[in-house]
Image 1 (cartoon, helix red, strand yellow):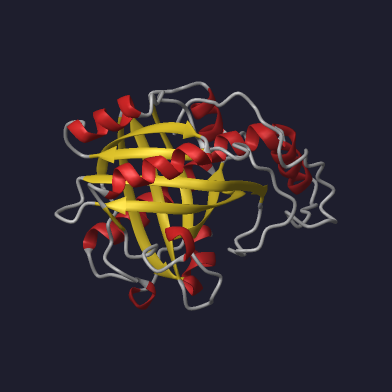
Image 2 (tube, rainbow, N blue to C red):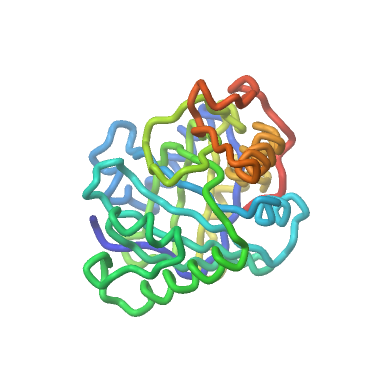
Length: 283
């Protein structure tokens, strides 16, 4: 793994754009930033990101997004491969008014089942000895247990990321082919069963910054007549799949039944993959 470029506190503006526009945006951004190290040698400069989102059985974090609560959070496990030796990052993403704050702790994959059961990892399971990472894992566990949260959805997409050559204060990403599927286990697979594409062919452009809005960001927005919008991947996925898919799983578990999510035998009625909905509040 390369250096951790996670921005602990930032502002982020989101825009939904067409692929034809994304190509022109790339050329604009290229004069200010460079591709990040993960995408530099990949086809089209993009790499796959996978996230397992956790939520309560009453979908608290989903409804907080739908209701546009100004102070809200998400719990997710982020991973990039299903290799047993690949790392997994436990992340808390908070929105406080317009600010985004993230806490993240990385562990070896073997530690995942224990963490999801409420156990803290052993020292040999940690990817870093930095105290902030262990604190993030502690906090994740506290929130997860208080919500009685469990796995709900697998979200994947291809990310093209551009970073500053000087510091981590500015970052631009473009996410394509966002797919969401129900996932009620901690298998952390990269393959996906029946899924939906809540944004269709649209590209999610994010302008991320830690200080003031850079002047060249302003020029970018004006040059392409961009309109800030919403792009909450997990929430849009739940909307597109239908909330009852998730409530049904909770009812089945209460009755001692628990189908394997994403399989053809799960009994889930998943709508067509290209169904589009009005975007919910961004997050």
